[in-house]
Length: 171
Image (cartoon, rainbow, N blue to C red):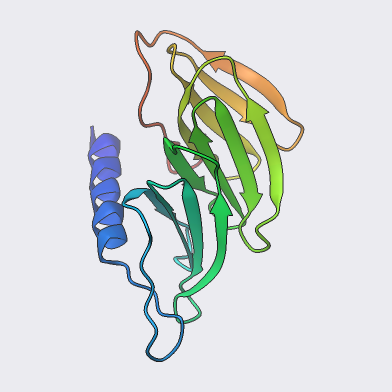
């Protein structure tokens, strides 16, 4: 119960921070996303912030360097979920039947998965190598995204998991 409560509180803090976040592009020029924020995440050090908007764009910010925008990534459509690896090096996004993974620093697309069903939620493990992915038909899958290979499928959900995460140790 405490872990669940802590996760809900953290999610509420991130959502509030995303609504209030207005990074600057210099002394006087401010930034505004074209669409509503639909997902956001911070890395574990608090130096990288990513936000996805309702237009299908993902914005990667370096908040340790005067909140400068590093990249604008295009997911090509609706975004269900967004995850940032603990070290801030990779961004994963689900939307429709596609999962995309980018390098956060360069903006280079590293991986793309297509599924036969909609993908709803995604979460990086602490090691940055593994992802949990929630499918619309109920199962949650564990993947090594670099290879790519599915390691395990967790069944038992009667409907889609709309939020997934890891315990603090990444297990």
